[in-house]
Length: 595
Image (cartoon, rainbow, N blue to C red; front, side, top):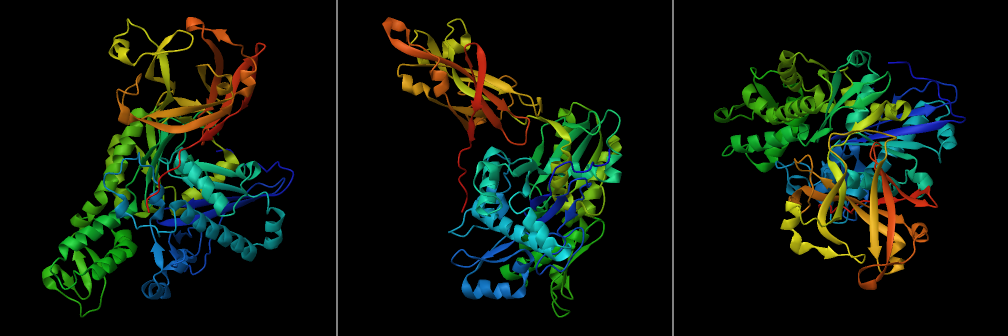
């Protein structure tokens, strides 16, 4: 890759990237000084954190008291005294809370809301995210103050201009992006103003991981010739799989719809706890407290070390006096067959393999390289399982380096600096519900003849039609615009001053969906676009329609930009033959959060 260029701005800037993961979270940052080449740095020290260094992350844990006040976050929430507070004072320790934000449209048959630790009654998932991001921000500023010369002065100089890059899984959609933005405002990262909102940037974890890999000398070698590359970001909750192709260095395009699977490393731990409960039923060590303790030890040690299913694995939970040979417990440790432990990992590996296969099938270029990053990538068993699957296919498979856990945070800053991806692929088909002119010769129209509705002009239309704007699998550049023409007929002119239209997402298998009533479960409202059409209304005059009825006919277009990480919209109309435009507001439905 070409070397990063010096910052050309006129004044100093600061960029923070927050990688809020299901199990662990990290922060990276970069000061941009005029004339200097930007250097990405990590926040490598947090309160109560024993491990420091380039791979430093904190547990995504937060503790609240009974009033909903934050009492401990990250590594602080794992200290011994916290357990006493939980038992004595009813504090709540939250883990895996990020999964409460997941889209309900994601395939997640193996997980239900009751499988995720419940939120406190006085907290929503967005509020928890805000509290957590506030803590990350405080820690990041403290780290800069303590580790950089004149750090406090440097922070003061960029206090009101700091930019924030917030990453999210590939499968998170518009409503989740809205929640992340709301949480950032609640956390006090930026004010709730247009200027404040403009300082928040969202990036998928897959795209952030691509930028991280591009900064790795080993990974950069994989982007060559006319081949595609798949990035697998294996995290605690989700597996994000994305495919890219280098067009003209250093520009890249997505070449397949990004994948997201809920099969991260926490699900290995969940399966382990279920297995322990079954295996130790009837043993003196089969109580729920002991099972929870063993599961925690499995998660922190056994899971990390497991690499060969031909070798036994151990959970060391007690002292030399703790034994029950009939349950394979000796000297305070439980012995497990390696083949049994492998079954705990296999569903996650199978999900990754399936996602890679789907990416290879959908990609417009041949895939010759797969990179594995993320915290789960440290699993030797997972790495070997995927390598054994991919090498016979002639696919090069590797982990860029040892610091794969910081791939998203570092990559999110690189996304801000370098912006390598110029086109993204639509994951679904998007369009609008509309009415279409009734055609008595069309068989589908005949089936719906009883639904025909007369319009003021005398036209007869059918409801429940679907008009596609963007088809699944289409590569969309950041500057590409998609226009949808609208015609409204109303009797009351005041109804022409404002328009609200639904943007609908079709998730089914048809390449040309025409009717929303044929597969009603496959259509869902992505968002609503609100636009002030009063300026358009000024250009129209009354008309005479059916039976001399006076009505107003209004014509305009909604312009949509899908190529950015977030959907944007504009309103377009003609006035005296000249196109006019004005902003339109994209509003996502509020997400019902599980408590």
